[in-house]
Image (cartoon, rainbow, N blue to C red; front, top):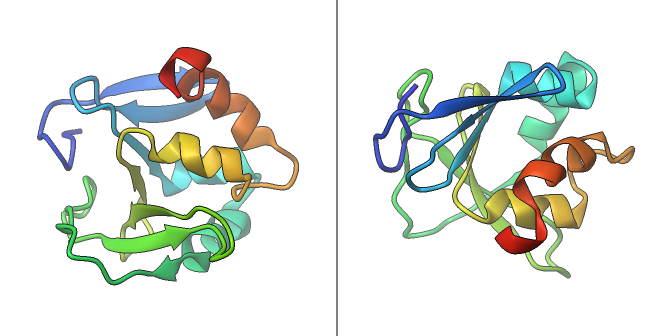
Amino acid sequence: MDCPVCKSAMIVLELDEVEVDYCTECEGIWLDAGELELLLGGASQSDALLTSFQPAKTPEKRRKCPICLKKMDKVLVGDAAEKQELIDRCPKNHGLWFDCGELQGVLKMGHFDDEGRVRTLLGGIFCSENRE
């Protein structure tokens, strides 16, 4: 799979049976719907997450989904009262794209899951002290 930002080939990192696509050039991360299902415990939780984000109006260039090649929507993660992250979501719910540093910001907010499974699994790789 090619990176939607720099077009480099991404590598697959397997973390506890969950495959995460990672770009070694721009350090972007792609989590597809199947990976989100595994992380969150099912399709309904994944769908709920993907549809929960607020659409955002921004001049930032829209990127193409690495699966369907449709332009992704820019969405805000987080509450208005706290720092929000602007990420990319496939309009067909194929997954989420995180530019370098965005996943770390989202995981710190704890908006993925109440049980902390996602933060525990992904945080160990993508939120180490030297990457913050």
